[in-house]
Image (cartoon, rainbow, N blue to C red; front, side, top):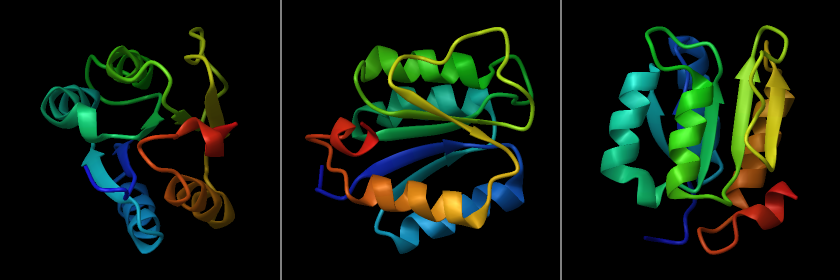
Amino acid sequence: MTSRPHVMIVEDNYLLLDALTAVCEQHGVGVVAASSGEAALTLLRQRGAAIDWLLTDISLPGLVDGWSVAQAYRAIHPDRPVIYASAGERRERSPVSRSLFLQKPLRTREIVEIARMMAQTTARAPMEAAG
């Protein structure tokens, strides 16, 4: 894997997914995009070792929500960063440890800050930027 960090973005709102992808790529972060939890789990099985960050919406269409995606990601990478996003309140489940929670709607400033934080991170030390 190159030193360029990679994020998996799981978001069912295609406009937001495109905006997040564009900003991350502008900051040198590679993106693996999924619009459902089921697609995210498939991509994690295929490419999970190469993903340094996970940014997931909590409420996703289908049977697999963002909580489940985060658990699957953490099974591969126990100490890597997870960023949750939701338009609602934090739900009944707790975020995985050492994670961030963002309230939707996301502001452009927040998206840029997240992309910068990820860009400063390498696969060798992803938690240094996340604190």
